Length: 118
Length: 113
Image 1 (cartoon, chains in turn green, red):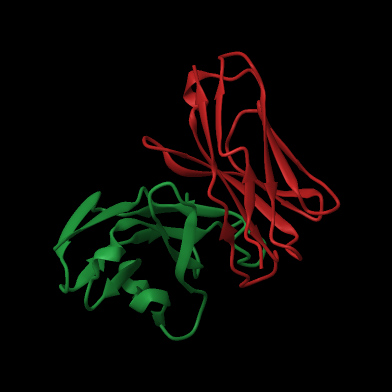
Image 2 (tube, helix red, strand yellow):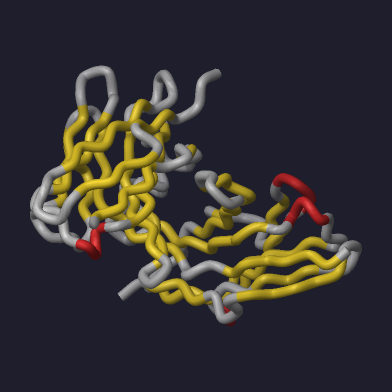
């Protein structure tokens, strides 16, 4: 069965430090992969997505992610964290019965809560 | 352009009652998906509607149902509410085509007492 694992429940980094959030997936074929961010009381905002092609994907707000098929990973990175990045981050995979990668049916990880120290 | 609108934002219901949640997608979007978010289970897919037809369905009991209207607005209904149905219910809309981005609403916070 498809699944997404985010091993870190909570991460604290200092403002200006680099960030890497881990994501591992279980999927039988080439997956559609996404990272979303959720601020308290808000819905989810798409940071970036990977469908095919270049394995290093650039997103909004200075985030990037690298798809590594050999490790079944899609880790999210940011070189310098800002206090406004404090939020919860979710990795997701498009489910196999999904229609052509339309994101209508996503399997999410449990999320990683990011705290930023001043 | 206007975003995804979910109403109401907050609901308190009694166990055994039923509830209807509404989602108005972005204009032109034909796909609407529903997710349940709880601290214990995280984000779980409920169902997706595309052009008034249910296209995908998650692993939830039949008490959870939905529909989509010709204007793409969608409703989700939960009957015979249980305490465990307390959650944030999120709606997402997209064009429903390959590679199209899903935009999420702010959600409806349902509390069952």
